View 1 (spheres, rainbow, N blue to C red):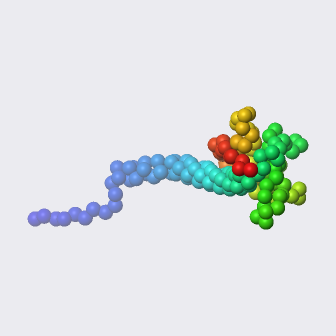
View 2: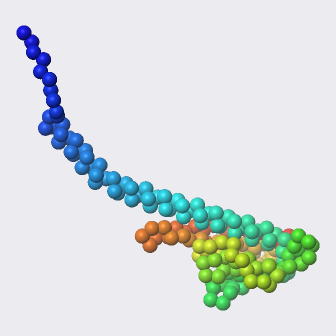
Length: 170
């Protein structure tokens, strides 16, 4: 005669394997969550500074293409990096001449129209420079932007936009 015995519970080896797996998961989980959090912060900073840089370059490009080449003045605001301000005259939408200026003030980029105090168009700016890449052609201008944003543990994410050459049309 055969009897069927019912097994209840787990063997000691099965329990030890489960405890070992749980231990590995408990040790790895905090590090994984920390790395994921850091990755998210870096990507968020990257997206934000790319947005700022693209918007700032688009504004500057649009206005500089309408500038009068003879009116360009590159200098800097007191206490700011060299070549960090550009002032020029351009035609506005009504066809009248107006003075435009782009300049760095601390970590912000400002746009000023008609000599009135500027409005902020980008933040987290580390450095902006306006230069002439060729000495024989005053109608080509280079713009270099570097933006920076804090991420985690005192670190920062910086993005240098490629130097963009703008041809002054007037």
